View 1 (cartoon, rainbow, N blue to C red):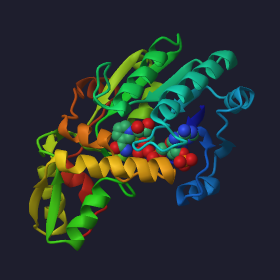
View 2 (spheres, rainbow, N blue to C red; view 1 turned 90 degrees about the vertical axis):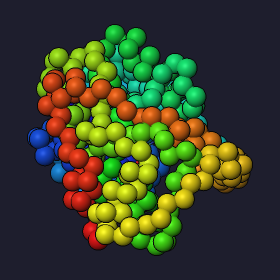
View 3 (tube, rainbow, N blue to C red; view 1 turned 90 degrees about the horizontal axis):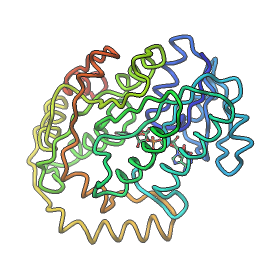
View 4 (cartoon, rainbow, N blue to C red; view 1 turned 180 degrees about the horizontal axis):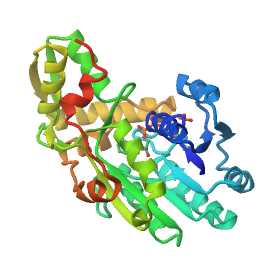
Length: 304
Ligand SMILES: NC(=O)c1ccc[n+]([C@@H]2O[C@H](COP(=O)([O-])OP(=O)(O)OC[C@H]3O[C@@H](n4cnc5c(N)ncnc54)[C@H](OP(=O)(O)O)[C@@H]3O)[C@@H](O)[C@H]2O)c1
């Protein structure tokens, strides 16, 4: 099958392109402004054609879809900037892609959302993910929506950042109350589910929660990484309230003035306080997801 993938230069995108190519699919990877090593890696891969990201040109978007049988839409941001807002990255790109898919007669649309997405969500991240989901559900296309919990793997921004803190400092900070739970799962497991759904008609019209087998608090996540690295650390809590002014400053100065994704946002602090868990039984039954434990997953790429 020939598939157009947006967000192909991202962490998930790169893993998914590899998975699809391994399974014999042809990939048209939409590449934005990134000059990252992942963009370079895509250029070297066989059966991968690169097309420029063209959301300001609907005609070029339709062209990018020509002769494809499915669209996988991965674009998303976790920290907005002046030029990349949540609304533009999540809602606007989805609207334009759905329109182009309808016009080009591409019926299969696989959409990346996130756990925690709901109409009354606290964070702008989840609110805009919900708006995008609603567009997909109303599109009339054969859609599948995925809502993963936090995703880890080589090159991720999550486990690798925590691992660096553990390796460098004797004390590690648990932001917020540390009570919110998450169900981390491997990026290869996410890629597996996306690839499987292309072959599985029962996934049409479905919204799948994706996650690992355990619901872990941030403290437990830290402890598991410390164990795997063989470096027990003392944890200290920083209440979210204390971090709010810092997050606000980061958003204004980095996101607003410098137009660079801020390292911390108020949205992220709010999301940390919420549990990020879901029901993975439908993904087990329909797609064959068999997630490994967090410890087993990170042991594959973290070294003591
Ligand atoms: N990572 C997680 O733990 C996690 C969990 C749940 C859901 N998700 C969702 O999974 C998706 C992929 O996440 P990821 O971790 O792979 O993110 P990532 O590494 O930051 O990649 C994001 C991709 O989206 C592209 N992009 C962002 N804004 C864009 C815009 N306005 N126009 C065009 N392209 C744009 C980026 O292109 P450039 O290369 O040009 O920047 C990049 O290819 C996102 O939708 C995210 O919300 C991720």
